[in-house]
Amino acid sequence: MMRKFIGTILLFILLSACSRATETPMPVETLQPVMASSVTETPVNATPVGVCPAETADLKLFTNAADGYCFLYPKDDSASPPYMVIIHPNGTSGGDFLPGDALVEVNREAAAGRTAAQAADAKIAEAGQGFNITRTEILMDGKPAIVVDGLPAQDPWREVFIVDNDHLFILFFEPWTPDADWFSKLENLYSVVIASFHVMPPTP
Image 1 (cartoon, rainbow, N blue to C red):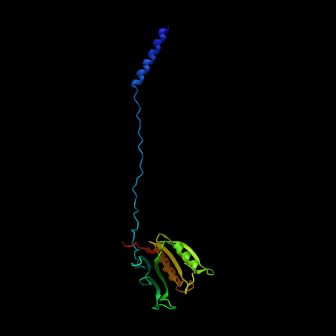
Image 2 (cartoon, rainbow, N blue to C red; image 1 turned 90 degrees about the horizontal axis):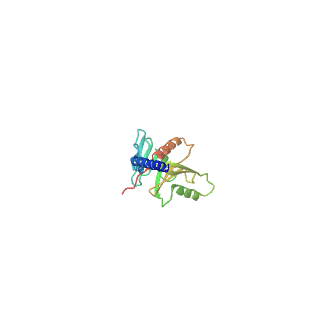
């Protein structure tokens, strides 16, 4: 009886060994890391850097290469290089008289590390108390700009501050008098200039 039992155990062990010897090992998969693509697509309609806006049937291009900016203006207005566009020019300049009914004038100075907001706030602080000054933030040429109305001046004007290439550009729209019969033309000039103003990259 004992021999039969031992024989049965040996037979079981032998069959188990044969089964393991013929068993096919399962393949072990190696996971490869997935690397993110470093290719960056360029938008089809991207505007090349340094390109001024194109003229249209109703708009002309004003360029001041020396100060490094350009913008469009209505064809009915008159360019007065190097930094002015005039509405209804009359030839008068200086003193108490404007060279036309209204105008936009662009001044450039060193930003000296200031932002447009800092430059505008300094002007507002210089004016002191007692003036109805308003301050509005806008985007201009893809950059933050500040519009200020109500700064004390001989004629009321609107000032727009923008900084690029460490240069501060201040645009003066004057006289900013909404009750004037030509004011809609100045509003139109303002809208066109703000929408098209472009700072050209510095030359090497």
